[in-house]
Length: 276
Image 1 (cartoon, helix red, strand yellow):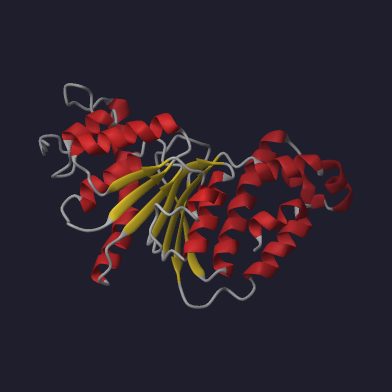
Image 2 (tube, one colour; image 1 turned 90 degrees about the horizontal axis):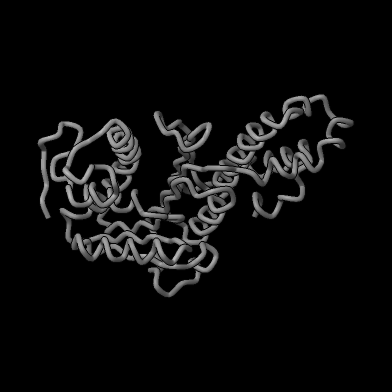
């Protein structure tokens, strides 16, 4: 496996074969404008996850990462190449329901000699009970797991009591659909319905409420939460990065505030998704 530092944008020790396989580098090993942007995006996300991995290693743990909605496993491969490859411990699991992608990522991991990467062709709900996963999970990630797939990743992480959760939600449509369904009723109950009167506002406001409810759910289960924006990502209108760290005590009023939001915006139909 060859590495290079010839291109200043590429981190020392980075596998060139991997970057070509992920189409971040061209076949002749160069960066064009699009691939340079893609590489910058991946490294930006890695900078948030690396300290979590370092904290686990410093505490004497061998990090176990589960990446939900892994797709082509860009994130998993970059994490392994930059962090796990130089160590003799730790493991990354990619969860993906599309079998063709699972087979491709398995083949790529084998080709690169990334022995501590595994890929499972299972839905998130089944992954909770899968015997192919260890009992202890340290970090759960979900990068652009569309719509309710992010919620499935959260449920998995809470069930496993993972110390860290890293989410970049995407295409949140469920809340907006329920808001649309109850729109006429909402107009008669509260002037706040003007916030989602127009379809584009329904989509944006629904996305905002979705992530607020997710944060409250995490806090109600004893996680401290930080929310920031991933700069330069173009996958959706806004790319929120949610990082949750497990602590001892849950936020006392998180559940009650979530209940109030569901009532205020006629979203009681979604109670089981956001409150448990």
